[in-house]
Length: 198
Image (cartoon, rainbow, N blue to C red; front, side):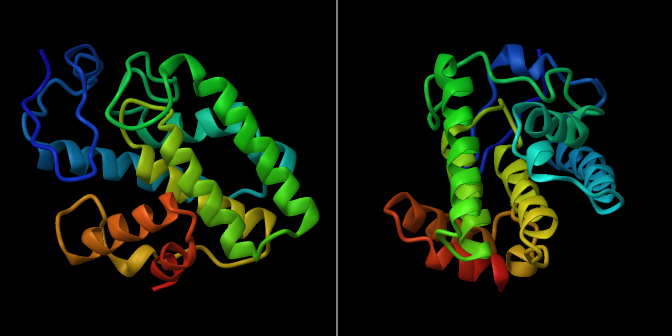
């Protein structure tokens, strides 16, 4: 049985089987888990900064899953693998591969056709991959890093600041972020773009 975790608004609870995938058995609190995940994520961020990626590389299921794995492989056994349970958010677990393939194809189309500004392309990708909710945990953080990779490696922009705050912690920045995500649910991406650049 995994640690007892307290979830903030917008966080997806883990099933007991998913908690059993915790690789560091001494973790017993949410803050300890957050700290270990953040250390792992920092290694993944540094990896993205040291390399150059092509559109074909980034916009592939293998890259997307591989990035999640790099972000969480020192903490979770299931890092980089699609969730096997349904959650309070996201598509049916069986539809994840198809929904992700559609998102990848749409993003290629947005880039090739220059349908939106570079920031909006990256933010639309980020928003939609969160709504697919590919993984048991870390979907928001993974989606933000994917948006940073898309904007910096594929579209020639600077990485986003994401409000300059740790969005895992409760606070005003997280509240603004969740509000902007809900606006995106309604098709209005400007608040999320503004937040990402604030």
